[in-house]
Image (cartoon, rainbow, N blue to C red; front, side, top):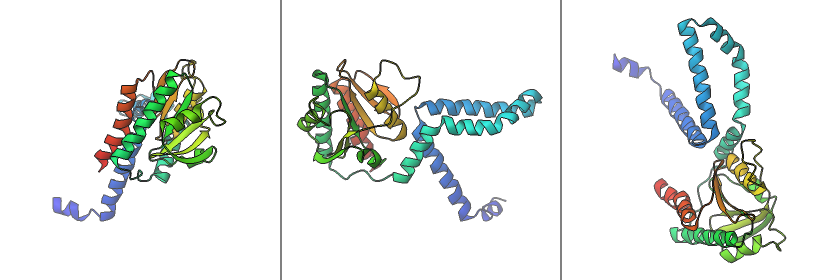
Length: 257
Protein backbone atom coordinates (compact mmCIF):
# COMPACT_ATOMS: atom_id res chain seq x y z
CA UNK A 1 0.00 0.00 0.00
CA UNK A 2 2.76 2.40 1.00
CA UNK A 3 4.78 1.54 -2.12
CA UNK A 4 1.71 2.20 -4.29
CA UNK A 5 1.18 5.62 -2.72
CA UNK A 6 4.87 6.52 -3.15
CA UNK A 7 4.73 5.51 -6.79
CA UNK A 8 2.05 8.14 -7.36
CA UNK A 9 4.23 10.94 -5.94
CA UNK A 10 6.05 12.88 -8.66
CA UNK A 11 9.29 14.82 -8.15
CA UNK A 12 7.31 17.94 -9.12
CA UNK A 13 5.02 17.36 -6.12
CA UNK A 14 8.00 17.21 -3.75
CA UNK A 15 9.46 20.38 -5.28
CA UNK A 16 6.08 22.08 -5.03
CA UNK A 17 5.77 21.29 -1.31
CA UNK A 18 9.34 22.39 -0.59
CA UNK A 19 8.87 25.74 -2.37
CA UNK A 20 5.63 26.46 -0.52
CA UNK A 21 7.32 25.55 2.78
CA UNK A 22 10.27 27.88 2.11
CA UNK A 23 8.00 30.76 1.09
CA UNK A 24 5.78 30.38 4.16
CA UNK A 25 8.84 30.13 6.41
CA UNK A 26 10.32 33.34 4.96
CA UNK A 27 7.02 35.18 5.33
CA UNK A 28 6.68 34.09 8.97
CA UNK A 29 10.26 35.21 9.69
CA UNK A 30 9.55 38.65 8.21
CA UNK A 31 6.32 39.25 10.15
CA UNK A 32 7.63 37.71 13.39
CA UNK A 33 7.37 40.24 16.21
CA UNK A 34 5.45 42.78 14.11
CA UNK A 35 1.84 43.92 14.19
CA UNK A 36 1.27 41.82 11.11
CA UNK A 37 1.71 38.71 13.26
CA UNK A 38 -1.14 39.85 15.51
CA UNK A 39 -3.33 40.59 12.48
CA UNK A 40 -2.52 37.14 11.08
CA UNK A 41 -3.79 35.60 14.33
CA UNK A 42 -6.99 37.62 13.94
CA UNK A 43 -7.45 36.31 10.40
CA UNK A 44 -6.89 32.78 11.71
CA UNK A 45 -9.59 33.26 14.35
CA UNK A 46 -11.98 34.52 11.68
CA UNK A 47 -11.26 31.50 9.49
CA UNK A 48 -11.81 29.20 12.47
CA UNK A 49 -15.20 30.87 13.08
CA UNK A 50 -16.07 30.25 9.44
CA UNK A 51 -15.25 26.53 9.70
CA UNK A 52 -17.05 26.08 13.03
CA UNK A 53 -20.14 27.93 11.81
CA UNK A 54 -20.53 25.38 9.01
CA UNK A 55 -19.86 22.40 11.28
CA UNK A 56 -22.18 23.58 14.08
CA UNK A 57 -24.90 24.90 11.78
CA UNK A 58 -24.56 28.55 12.88
CA UNK A 59 -26.19 29.88 9.73
CA UNK A 60 -26.17 33.57 10.66
CA UNK A 61 -22.43 33.63 11.35
CA UNK A 62 -21.83 31.54 8.24
CA UNK A 63 -23.82 34.03 6.12
CA UNK A 64 -21.97 37.04 7.58
CA UNK A 65 -18.52 35.53 7.02
CA UNK A 66 -19.37 34.44 3.46
CA UNK A 67 -20.77 37.89 2.66
CA UNK A 68 -17.60 39.58 3.91
CA UNK A 69 -15.11 37.09 2.44
CA UNK A 70 -14.32 39.12 -0.71
CA UNK A 71 -13.88 42.29 1.36
CA UNK A 72 -11.69 40.40 3.85
CA UNK A 73 -9.20 39.53 1.09
CA UNK A 74 -8.98 43.20 0.08
CA UNK A 75 -8.67 44.28 3.73
CA UNK A 76 -5.79 41.81 4.26
CA UNK A 77 -3.92 43.29 1.29
CA UNK A 78 -4.37 46.83 2.67
CA UNK A 79 -3.48 45.92 6.27
CA UNK A 80 -0.43 43.89 5.27
CA UNK A 81 0.78 46.41 2.67
CA UNK A 82 4.07 47.29 4.47
CA UNK A 83 4.90 43.62 5.09
CA UNK A 84 4.01 42.62 1.51
CA UNK A 85 6.17 45.42 0.12
CA UNK A 86 9.07 44.47 2.38
CA UNK A 87 8.74 40.77 1.52
CA UNK A 88 8.78 41.44 -2.22
CA UNK A 89 11.76 43.77 -1.82
CA UNK A 90 13.74 41.16 0.12
CA UNK A 91 12.86 38.40 -2.34
CA UNK A 92 13.75 40.56 -5.35
CA UNK A 93 16.89 42.19 -4.00
CA UNK A 94 18.27 39.67 -1.52
CA UNK A 95 21.99 39.29 -1.84
CA UNK A 96 24.90 37.87 0.09
CA UNK A 97 26.30 40.07 2.82
CA UNK A 98 29.65 41.73 2.07
CA UNK A 99 32.50 39.32 2.69
CA UNK A 100 34.47 41.27 5.29
CA UNK A 101 36.56 39.67 7.97
CA UNK A 102 35.23 39.62 11.51
CA UNK A 103 37.97 42.07 12.54
CA UNK A 104 36.86 44.63 9.93
CA UNK A 105 33.22 44.22 10.89
CA UNK A 106 33.96 44.58 14.59
CA UNK A 107 36.02 47.72 13.96
CA UNK A 108 33.25 49.31 11.88
CA UNK A 109 30.57 48.45 14.43
CA UNK A 110 32.75 49.83 17.25
CA UNK A 111 33.19 53.09 15.32
CA UNK A 112 29.41 53.32 14.93
CA UNK A 113 28.92 52.69 18.67
CA UNK A 114 31.51 55.35 19.63
CA UNK A 115 30.01 57.88 17.22
CA UNK A 116 26.47 57.24 18.49
CA UNK A 117 27.50 57.72 22.12
CA UNK A 118 29.52 60.86 21.30
CA UNK A 119 26.56 62.33 19.40
CA UNK A 120 24.21 61.46 22.27
CA UNK A 121 26.51 63.10 24.85
CA UNK A 122 26.52 66.30 22.78
CA UNK A 123 22.78 66.06 22.05
CA UNK A 124 23.35 66.12 18.30
CA UNK A 125 20.53 64.46 16.37
CA UNK A 126 21.52 61.58 14.10
CA UNK A 127 19.98 58.88 11.94
CA UNK A 128 22.32 55.98 11.11
CA UNK A 129 21.13 53.20 8.81
CA UNK A 130 23.04 49.91 8.49
CA UNK A 131 22.10 47.92 5.41
CA UNK A 132 21.57 44.17 5.67
CA UNK A 133 20.25 42.02 2.81
CA UNK A 134 17.71 44.41 1.29
CA UNK A 135 19.44 46.82 -1.09
CA UNK A 136 18.80 50.48 -0.16
CA UNK A 137 19.88 51.96 -3.50
CA UNK A 138 16.61 53.90 -3.93
CA UNK A 139 17.31 55.83 -0.73
CA UNK A 140 21.04 56.13 -1.47
CA UNK A 141 20.33 57.83 -4.79
CA UNK A 142 18.33 60.56 -3.03
CA UNK A 143 21.28 61.48 -0.78
CA UNK A 144 24.87 62.63 -1.20
CA UNK A 145 27.00 59.64 -2.18
CA UNK A 146 30.29 59.35 -0.26
CA UNK A 147 31.71 55.79 -0.29
CA UNK A 148 34.05 56.44 2.65
CA UNK A 149 35.36 54.16 5.39
CA UNK A 150 33.30 54.14 8.58
CA UNK A 151 34.88 56.22 11.32
CA UNK A 152 33.73 58.04 14.45
CA UNK A 153 35.21 61.32 13.26
CA UNK A 154 33.48 61.22 9.88
CA UNK A 155 30.08 60.44 11.43
CA UNK A 156 30.50 63.30 13.90
CA UNK A 157 31.40 65.64 11.04
CA UNK A 158 28.40 64.60 8.96
CA UNK A 159 25.87 65.14 11.75
CA UNK A 160 27.40 68.36 13.09
CA UNK A 161 24.73 71.10 12.85
CA UNK A 162 26.99 73.16 10.59
CA UNK A 163 27.27 70.34 8.04
CA UNK A 164 25.13 70.82 4.90
CA UNK A 165 24.17 67.11 4.95
CA UNK A 166 23.42 66.73 8.67
CA UNK A 167 19.65 66.79 8.18
CA UNK A 168 19.11 63.28 6.85
CA UNK A 169 20.22 59.69 7.27
CA UNK A 170 23.62 58.11 6.81
CA UNK A 171 23.52 54.72 5.07
CA UNK A 172 26.28 52.23 5.86
CA UNK A 173 27.02 49.09 3.87
CA UNK A 174 29.62 46.78 5.37
CA UNK A 175 32.48 49.00 6.53
CA UNK A 176 31.68 51.87 4.13
CA UNK A 177 29.52 54.96 4.51
CA UNK A 178 27.74 54.86 1.17
CA UNK A 179 25.68 58.05 1.40
CA UNK A 180 24.57 60.85 3.73
CA UNK A 181 21.67 63.28 3.79
CA UNK A 182 19.28 60.53 2.68
CA UNK A 183 15.54 60.89 3.16
CA UNK A 184 13.60 57.93 4.50
CA UNK A 185 9.88 57.05 4.37
CA UNK A 186 7.98 58.21 7.45
CA UNK A 187 5.78 55.85 9.44
CA UNK A 188 2.29 57.38 9.59
CA UNK A 189 0.65 55.00 12.05
CA UNK A 190 -1.46 56.69 14.73
CA UNK A 191 -0.15 54.13 17.25
CA UNK A 192 3.28 55.77 17.33
CA UNK A 193 3.83 57.95 20.40
CA UNK A 194 3.60 61.70 19.83
CA UNK A 195 6.86 62.00 21.76
CA UNK A 196 8.68 60.62 18.71
CA UNK A 197 9.76 63.14 16.12
CA UNK A 198 10.60 62.91 12.44
CA UNK A 199 13.83 60.92 12.97
CA UNK A 200 12.08 58.20 14.94
CA UNK A 201 9.22 58.00 12.43
CA UNK A 202 11.75 57.77 9.60
CA UNK A 203 13.57 54.96 11.40
CA UNK A 204 10.34 53.04 11.95
CA UNK A 205 9.21 53.67 8.37
CA UNK A 206 12.39 52.29 6.81
CA UNK A 207 12.50 49.20 9.02
CA UNK A 208 8.86 48.45 8.19
CA UNK A 209 9.81 48.21 4.50
CA UNK A 210 13.31 46.70 4.72
CA UNK A 211 15.45 44.56 7.02
CA UNK A 212 17.83 47.46 7.75
CA UNK A 213 18.96 48.35 11.27
CA UNK A 214 18.54 52.00 12.29
CA UNK A 215 20.18 53.91 15.15
CA UNK A 216 18.46 57.16 16.16
CA UNK A 217 20.00 59.82 18.39
CA UNK A 218 17.60 62.41 19.79
CA UNK A 219 18.82 66.00 19.86
CA UNK A 220 16.20 66.87 22.52
CA UNK A 221 17.08 64.20 25.09
CA UNK A 222 20.38 62.75 23.84
CA UNK A 223 18.82 59.29 24.05
CA UNK A 224 19.80 56.47 21.72
CA UNK A 225 17.08 54.35 20.11
CA UNK A 226 17.40 51.34 17.82
CA UNK A 227 14.80 50.34 15.24
CA UNK A 228 14.37 46.88 13.67
CA UNK A 229 11.32 45.49 11.83
CA UNK A 230 9.24 48.51 12.82
CA UNK A 231 9.99 48.07 16.54
CA UNK A 232 11.86 50.60 18.71
CA UNK A 233 14.17 49.98 21.65
CA UNK A 234 14.56 53.22 23.61
CA UNK A 235 17.27 54.49 25.99
CA UNK A 236 19.99 52.14 24.78
CA UNK A 237 23.35 52.55 26.56
CA UNK A 238 26.79 51.88 25.09
CA UNK A 239 26.99 48.27 26.29
CA UNK A 240 23.50 47.39 25.05
CA UNK A 241 24.16 49.04 21.68
CA UNK A 242 27.45 47.18 21.23
CA UNK A 243 25.85 43.84 22.15
CA UNK A 244 22.87 44.50 19.88
CA UNK A 245 25.03 45.25 16.82
CA UNK A 246 27.33 42.31 17.51
CA UNK A 247 24.39 39.92 17.87
CA UNK A 248 22.75 41.27 14.71
CA UNK A 249 25.71 41.40 12.33
CA UNK A 250 28.52 39.18 13.62
CA UNK A 251 26.87 36.25 15.37
CA UNK A 252 24.02 36.01 12.85
CA UNK A 253 26.54 35.69 10.00
CA UNK A 254 28.55 33.07 11.90
CA UNK A 255 25.38 31.00 12.31
CA UNK A 256 24.78 31.12 8.55
CA UNK A 257 28.24 29.76 7.75
